[in-house]
Length: 334
Image (cartoon, rainbow, N blue to C red):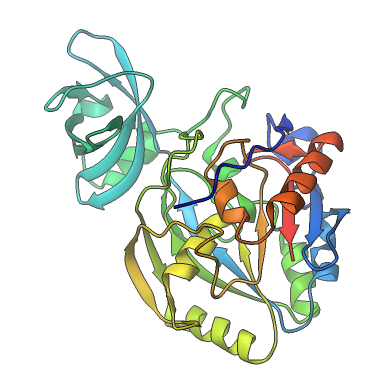
């Protein structure tokens, strides 16, 4: 069991991508929390190569964001927003019917003659997520590109194109929502990291919907840690370097591939929940965004910072005007 939830301040929400605020991606702000020195520093994300050491390893999520929001119509003609969360197999998904209740066996019409059928709730005690079948024209990726749109929440004031929801690392489409800790990376920052002797490896974890902010536990998600990344992690740790995860999705995937203190090639579905009690075996640092006061992500952060340090970091971020959520600023814990 996890300890009692830690409540932290909520800062201002980023309502648009940095480049639409007159910045480029790597000009977002970066709060650096030093666990050993118990202090916080205000930097720019462009400073990242200066903050890491030669021999450190960054691990990124190469999952690409899907246009996972669809509009369906029920039998009575009313519109229903459906968010794809995770693909189980061809035509079989976990989905979220937004802000409404559906019934087992109910069908709704999608564009181009497609149809979604809600089969059963994923959790009988929580009707937010459903197993569903989708009958649609093939290839499905092309269909989704035509009729889908990125998932967007109320604090984002307008619709932005799918490219705004992709990171520089995106190679494997499959995430319902962007692995947003990787978004500020630019070619300039990556070149700077290489010059500083910092390597980058990738893995894949397809992130599901994250609209459950109030202490709802993370769902099972598909992941893959390739042998090359497992080897890079083990070599880095053997040589005294630090393994720094770019995002909570990377922590979850890497820790799912931990065996007796070493990384192994692994894949499938992970239901691992990282908590302070469980701790981390492979990851020495974390680059992440700022999360809701009661978000389950905070339990994972508590595996890196104790409650007092984490609360102090969030108070500092809120007081200093850092921006929250997927288009916001970043937090580096070392």
